[in-house]
Image: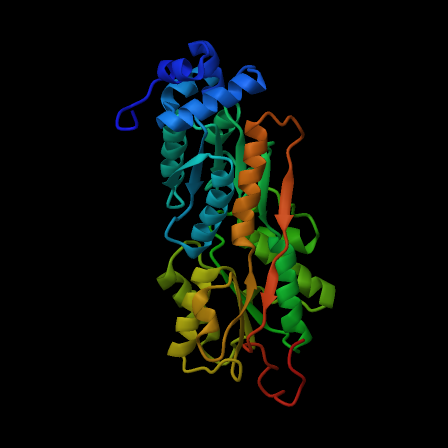
Length: 369
């Protein structure tokens, strides 16, 4: 009988129970005695029964699928997150429907609508819009939603991400401890809070900026600012370079403009992996040596950073753990957890590879701790 589709009625006859009882056992709903449950499962195994997931979803209201909207599925950052989500979903026999927003709000909206049409049991989203996001607010009224990497202002749902502020502050503190006083910062800083870079720097200097609703790059800028404040080192605003878009070419132009000429910083901190790649290209084009002429640290640990000579120091995000945590949180909500929204921030880790040295002219100083 394994060569054809087996029905619930056939399983019921083989187990000696009613079709309704077999349906409850195989559908995972309602009550059945342990004896009848065992008989049904043994009969299903012997006959090679495969469940009709669509029919079961009509009865239970659940499809046992989770929807994911990633910013860029080609990115190593999102690839590791998706691996973590898949690891956890698989242990609970949940499937995944994965979509890609390309960091575009309109595409994200369509992806969220599509996943809801597919009747997923819950959504994991890395939101493009951290302020309005009406589509996510509407979705959260229908199914459990977990936000990953970013939050949406005043949207009370679970979220998980790296501790961007603490990771950046620790990284810049290491540069300051090595004697650097002019540290450049190159970051995307695309979505503009508080009216732009200048007002943000003003507000952050007064301690009036909340991390909620900020893109990760702005959170890392906040960590950069706080490291300077903690060390009592004045911030040189001209060393904060806002690229304004996810573009290697635009980031390379900003980095080159900062490091070319006599006023270049003694160290550069980059806001993400794409910015790091662009900054490295600018450094090489300028004929500078790391760390002799310029120290460098990047937020996000990419494979190439371990292979160039010298290796590039980096802030490593717990990417897979972020995915695993988001999936566990979502599955708990799907199972009926009723609790206040949870905000989980995972610690980052500094990877030391030799790209931090003393500022030029202080070669005899101790190296960074």
